Image (cartoon, rainbow, N blue to C red; front, side, top):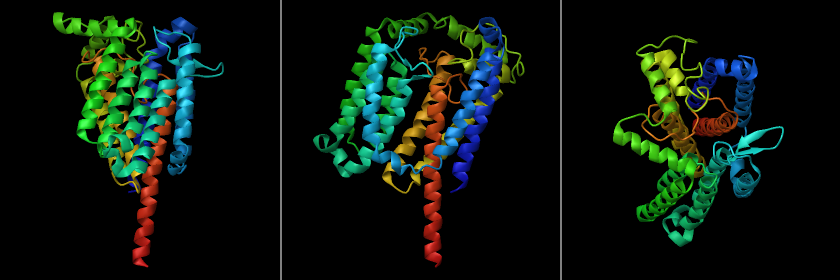
Length: 371
C-alpha cells in the first residue's frame, strides 16, 4: 500500500520536470520577442513548479480529515471569491476568470473545484443513505453544485464548469444517489450549460465554429490548425527535443493550453502515447488509493481528485487534436501557469495523504492481529 503514494508522487514529479522542459522549449521564442529574454517565462514557471512540489510534499503529511471540519467554511469563502472575481477582475479574452491581488493573481474556478469536491465528500459521508432521498440529502448537494457552477459559467468559463458538473454528478452516483434524480439534474445542468454557452459571445463563437468545422471538414480555428500541423509533423518519434517549428509564433500560446501540440511535434506519436499512458497510470493509482481509503470521506474525495485529473488531461488532448471545441483547459503539470499547478499539486498531496493514512492503518491492524 505504501508503494502507491510513492508512485503517485514520482509520477507527478516526473510530469512536472518534463513540463519544465516543454515550457522552456515552447515559450523560448515568444519570451525572446515579448521580454527580450528567452528564459523569462521558463524562469517564472520554474518558480511555480518547485513551489508546487514543496506544497505537495507539505500537504501529503497533513491529515486529510482536517479538510472535512472546515469544508463548508472554505466553500463560503470560495463563493465570495467567485463573486468578487465577476466585479473586480480584468476581462481577459472575453472572460472574468482571474483575481489579481497585486502580488499574485489566480484563477478562482480552479480553487472552487477542489473546494466543492471536499465539501461534497464530507456531505455524502454525513448524509449516508439519505442521499437517495431528494429532500433528505441530495438537494443540499445540488444547491452547492449548481450555485458554484453558475458562478463559474457566468465568468464565462464553460469548460471548468462542465468538468465541475461532470465530476460532481459522478461522485453523487458513487455516493448512492438515485439515477432518476441524477438524470433530472443532468438535464437541468445541460440546459443551463447550453443557455450560458450561447449567451456569451466568447463561448458561442467557439461552439459554432466547432460545429461549422464538422460540417465543412475544416479546422476549428487557426490555433487548432497549427496544433494539428505540429502533431502531424512529429510523425512517429518527433523532430527532436527543442526543434519544434510551431513554437516560433506559428502556434499562439504554444506554452499554455496547446502545449500538447509541442509534445507531439517534438516526441512524435510514441511520446504522446507514453505521456497519455502516464496520465492513465496515475489515474488508476488514484482510484486504487481512493478505494482503499479508511473512510467514506477519503474514498469520495480520492475519486473526485482522480477523475478531475484524467478528465482535464484528455479534454486538453482532444482540443489540441480538434475533437472538442477550444476550452482553455491546461494540460495537467505540463502547461504554463501557476493556479493550475498549485491546485494540482495540492490535490495530489491530499491523495498521497489518503494513501499514506490507509497504509498506516493497515500496518497497525496487522500488528494488532499478530500481537
